[in-house]
Length: 160
Figure (tube, rainbow, N blue to C red):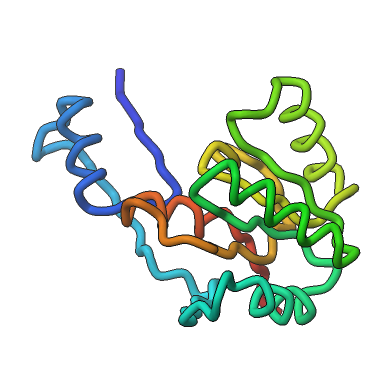
């Protein structure tokens, strides 16, 4: 009988934690793929003010594409969603402060392509199986490098 553990993207420290928690031995077959993915483009910009105008510029270049915008707080999630809606964009908020029904509805609309932008806290995205997520934007720096890897790994850009 064997044990298998999988993760899409993780840091070396988290890999060590998994190995320790599962009590793997050095002799066990541990396979680690590369973190670098040819199909992901990473860009960093200094934020100007609240970053809303920069975000609009980015979104204009990705009109009608599916994406996730991460913020660190419920308040920022709600205010950014409201701002995007005033600009005519199909956006929903997703955070733990919403009722179960509201979260389910937002998730359903995103997965069903009724909306194309999910503004969320880390509460959104774990285990999402959606092949057309084309961008992930961080309006705040994630608290850990692991969170950053997990969040950016949700983008699925297909190469031609």
